[in-house]
Amino acid sequence: MLVDQLKSGLDAPICLTWELTYACNLACIHCLSSSGRRDPRELSTDECKAVIDELARLQVFYVNIGGGEPTIRSDFFEIVDYAVAKGVGVKFSTNGSRIDAEAALRLSGSDYIDIQISLDGADRETNDAVRGDGSWDTAITAMNHLRDAGFGQFKISVVMTRHNIAQLDAFEALAAQYGAELRLTRLRPSGRGADTWDQLHPTNAQQRELYNWIITRPKVLTGDSFFHLSALGESLPGLNLCGAGRIVCLIDPIGEVYACPFVLHDEFKAGSVREAGGFTAVWRESELFTSLREPQSPGACGSCGSYDACQGGCMAAKFFTGLPLDGPDPECVWGNADDELARIAAATDSAKPSPGPGHSKPTPVSLGRKPVDAYS
Amino acid sequence: MPAGPTTVESVASAIDLAAAYRLHPNVAVRPEPFGALVYHYGNRKLVFLKSPRMVAVVRSLDDAPSVRSALETNGVAGKDTDRYLVALNSLLASDMLISSETPEVSCAR
Image (cartoon, rainbow over all chains, first blue to last red; front, top):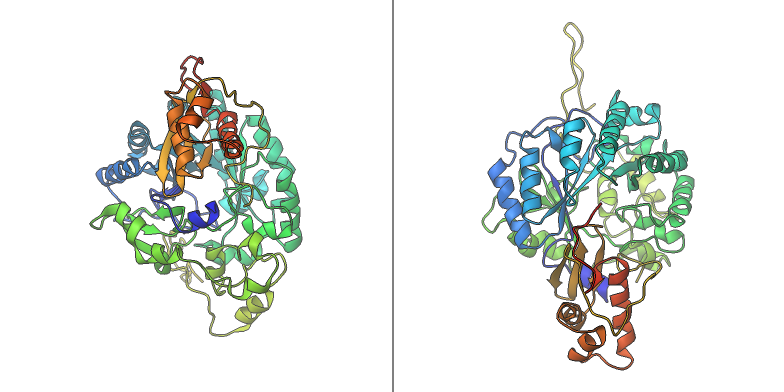
């Protein structure tokens, strides 16, 4: 069966995310890569081109470029142009801050470039509460430039939270206004999202609302990220499986390869493109990816009638909330993780792994005041 | 299996067994152990070809005078044919196959 074959891995990923930089002019409170400051060990332009050469050889159809804010890199367009010339399509995620009229015109020239503008609220107030002051205006300005330049269909990418689920219709209307596609993705407790998950993740009633909304809109994209909701009934469109290390992976700004975009943690690091053998060897031979491609135990979910539909949910969501990987997702629609989550919350020795200090910018400290711990 | 990228909700255009087709110039075929992945750079659709023979049929369309001939060349006959037609229809509906008479145009957005 195809799904079984996909689970046992492909010769190359179908969908590869490449965070080009951890530098970012924003500091979104749910940033899955805790971005802010550039890592000085970032891949050089030549190293990036060598990665692209490899992806072209592997016939990776396209890369999802992100960050940080990828357009901050001064060689951003050079890297994109190089990928396109090699037949590797590019979809990149941006907060829009560098998409001025000139950039929009330049990007409009290629069929091989797709753009995702991140917007986490259908109005300024909701969006800026998560993405920071001014981020709504920045995104809308970029969208106007893309429309004026005749870019065509770009994507508006929304991370679904407790505060924007009620805005689904408004997002749909906004996308229609720009002739854009709407893409909804799941909030993960990764990076800075680990700290804000409790306040931001949708309630179970909202999850049902979201499921009912998506199931009637086959044109709304979801990046397959809500497969845990398929337990509610008819399967959502998509492969409905965790593709980590099997059909997807992530390359971080310093060339390290992780199982998926949501598990930037040592535990899920498979290797580095800087090692001998490059990306290909990591994808095909790393111990981590090999083990992820072996049949996985359903564990505590084995006795639940929904397991075939939801596959136990998202590995990253489980990991960063301290749940066992072979058990229910923290957002299991049947509440099967609730007891364990309550136990973890009550425990003094928290089982939650630290998301690490990440790349957040230090909180500004004024002189004469008590220093503020950025991570408290 | 659940509906995936392989599924095309409504197959608007049905493949004509007597006609000749070829892959759209913006389409790439990547071999995989189970068959192949087919990707359209223009509309970014992805289709799975679930057996090596399916891949052989698709690859032979370029030179075959008709779909029927491509199927015969690869030994597809009888009840099997339907399964192949479903796959070819989904390629057609995703603009991955075009009629050999379609003039080559670059894919407009």
